[in-house]
Amino acid sequence: MSQAKIAQKSPYAVEVEAGKKYWWCACGQSKKQPFCDGSHKGTEFSPMEHQAQTSGTVYFCGCKQTKKSPLCDGTHNGL
Image (cartoon, rainbow, N blue to C red; front, side):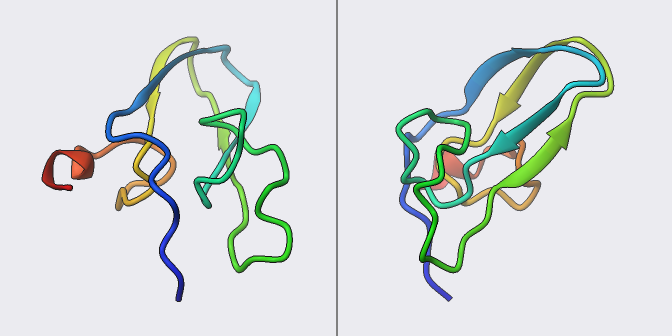
């Protein structure tokens, strides 16, 4: 399995709206980080859906190495 490209070594703080769906970029290639722009096409990666349960700030993983996809778990601190 290939490893995703590290988009940045910190999370993306995003204001989300309750009930809305967001598509997190899992490959690291998107130009619209942290969200998918279709750059994964032709790879083994697929975007991951995140449906916000509540409105507020969510920290999406920027390093693409998290164990809690699509949210940051602090893995970037060890890279």
